[in-house]
Length: 259
Image (cartoon, rainbow, N blue to C red; front, side):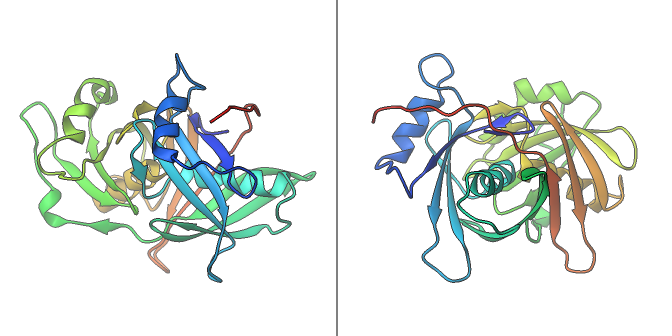
């Protein structure tokens, strides 16, 4: 499945076990020797009453991520359209907490999904200039770390993304966004995902970009973030300080692979 081009391999662990998910993610995500994806996502049944289902996501290099907004939307679509739930409000347990999904249904199909991504977190000491060629950035955590650089040249991310991911300021590595303001409500963004490289879209990255733009007074609290694979609508609500992300989710194909 993919959300705005951010594609993952999804395995329903209610039916199939993946005993070594890190290894599987690395092997299967290879676009030349495997299935090809930005990573692997495991769907499970929650064992705690606060959530309905669980999500674990692994990047293409096998490292486990805390949260993925695009994957969360895809899980919502999968659960509803495959008959595993009839709820249009689903609570999903992730490594960064319980996320609530709201499904928009049309003719029995999930048209879009809104995800409560929670509150953004900041570190004042993460406003710095890594080198003389890059403008000052903004650190925003959306359950996973992001560093947003506002620039006119978003294509710098291809070359500079891997350098910033491994910058000494980020001992656990970091997701990198290069963003260009098109207007006060539209942001063009390209993303280098920690452990996966350049991806077509990143849900938490879109949220981090929108928050950074509002924080630095470049944009209002409701924006459209245009990424390589599509557009996500982001709202940073003043009422609860939570970030809400809305976007599509699509099936690509079903398949079988032997472990």
